[in-house]
Length: 181
Image (cartoon, rainbow, N blue to C red; front, side):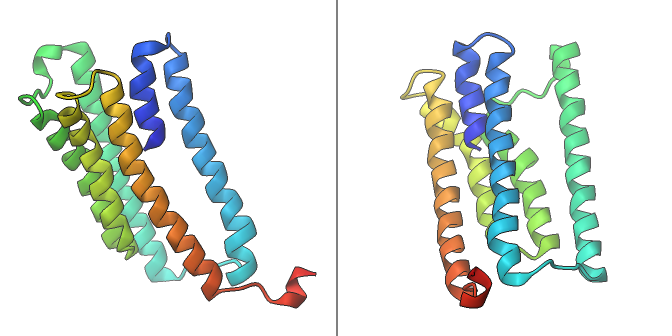
């Protein structure tokens, strides 16, 4: 989310393609952080998890929902760029609210349901609302900083939730002393 906010903000400041590179770098950083955390924090405590049939089925359903959402987003993006008259335009601040809830919150809620991951409902709501907050902040804060502040606020809440979860996980599953040496 933070990468999206920075990308929107830097879109006004940096030249093409540097504005997109910043968002991609933040996403790559998040992916690397996730993979390193899995390797050095989760696997030493729980081992390698093998998914059963039900978990594989849930994972497949989640992928299907997210791929359908991605295809819909690509179609809308192409329509907006090819023929702007056909694009979906909502009045004022409703654009951010409907876009965020329809294309971010709803698909992530489906993913949360299929994965049985309750915290993802909260994350989905925060991510979806960040677009709406950006629209609301635009009344008080000049562009492009309205998006940056909106995404930083919601990203900070998600990161804080992650840090709390990580601390709880480390306390619940400590590494045995013989494994540390």
